[in-house]
Amino acid sequence: MRPEEYVAILWRRWWVLVLAMLAAAAVAFGYSRFQPPTYQVSVRIIAQAQPPDYWLDLYAKNQLGVFQDMIRNGDFVRQALQRAGLSVDPGYALSTLALARDQNSNTVQLVVTDTDPQRAAAIANAVADAFVAQMQNQMQQVLAQFRDPQTGKPPGTLLVSKLDTATPPSIPTGPRVKLNTAAGGVLGLALGVLLAFALEYIDDTLYTEADVQRALGLDSIARLNGVRRGRREEYRMASSALVVVTQPRSAEAEAYRALALSLRFRGRQQPVRRLLLVSPGDSSATAVVAANVGLARALAGERVVLIDTDLRGGHLHHLFDLPPTPGLAEWLKCRDQREPAPHATSYERLAVLPAGQLGEGTSPADLLAAAPLDHLMTTLESQADALILTAAPLPTYGDALALASLVDGALLLVEGGRTRRTAAQEAKAALERAGATVLGVVFTRR
Image (cartoon, rainbow, N blue to C red; front, side, top):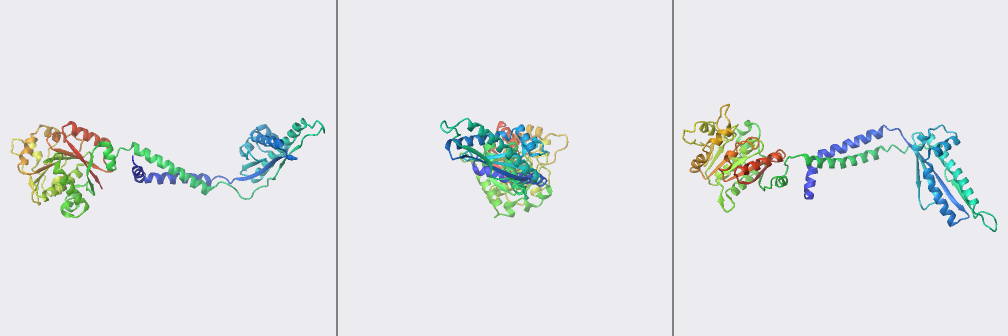
């Protein structure tokens, strides 16, 4: 995937990012807001050689490193608290202690964080005093073993002392509500990005033409915006659907004309006289596309017949304000009659054969499979330059498969943001198995 496709995924699912960021920030704010205030005190301890000596300084630094282990020792902390006369639980005191140390320095900093400023200062002083006393005594014992053979005196002394005495602070250091809220928002945004990509992975909806190309391996030969679909009352308003004649200078009308022109020839300059339009979704959008393509070809001088083979609920007659009968269904039920005559429309060179009305208990797929449709289309071709057929949704219904081998090519209508990838893949595979040449995809977006 190209970088812009990743951006498109995040842009499409921006609400996931916003919700995740707001939710995480709200949780961080709520947690921080209701935490008790905490106070922090520190005591610095220094160990230095008197007089200055490199080896004694190095020994002092190593001994200061022992402090890190000592403040994690429960026995040491308990003894330090008892020595200071504090009735604080040693386990709790251990949880408040932390040590900051520079490996190249002769100082360490003992930090105590507690909800009680008085207790924090008392714990810091108690532990620091205990460490100073213990280390001072231990160092003197060690140095006493190394005396100058001439003078009988130690080579020097190590002084361990506190540089600070902790006092109860008046201003709390936490919780940092603003910082925690901002950090929560950033973390939520990161989680939102991961969630957006996870949703994209499990979502099989086709949103863009790039999605169609990856899923179906078909080129999008037309991109149509604003294709109307839905209630039949809308189709009675030609101005809302037949944009080729009602809005001839619009971008949508130009797209239909370009599609009609590209369908006049395919491959080796072979004309597409029989065209099947089918959609994995609602066939009402298919009817709108077929009507506009038919009008574009008729206005370009071709004689066009629109054939509505969606016997489960035809839509073409609504668009042209025609009666639903007689139509294809009536001829299929009584094939001893001569071929049905298409209904003339108010547009020159354009006729419509509606789906008609099929009685209950009759299977459209069985009727279409048993009917001599090739003979019907041959007869209609004598009256027209092009036949454009619409069919019931595939793969929900298999009606279109009876027509697949009888047409010069089929177009798959994909509605961005609505058509499922699996449904489109199944429809394409079914058409190809039935002998249809799938010319490409008409990508629509409302």
